[in-house]
Image (spheres, rainbow, N blue to C red):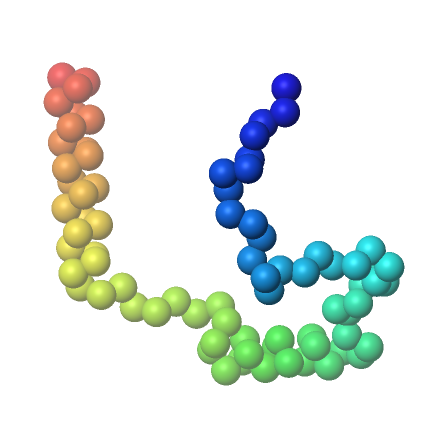
Amino acid sequence: MPIDISHLPHAPAWFEPIPSDLEPHRHTPDNPRRAVHEWLGHIAAGRIGTRTPTPPQVAANRDATAALFARIARERHA
């Protein structure tokens, strides 16, 4: 049974389907070694793989929520 979608808006004007005649690996760099070196440079600079410190308000909320759920669990098993 087909679903009526006539009430939905049309696709946005900027949307263009990708043509099927493009080669499958068009985004693969010509020299993958350069891409790896750039990636390693980002890691060495600390832009990838590092965590920002948790703000105190977020940590307090996380701890309070964990305590609340632990208390509820204890009450259910009592």
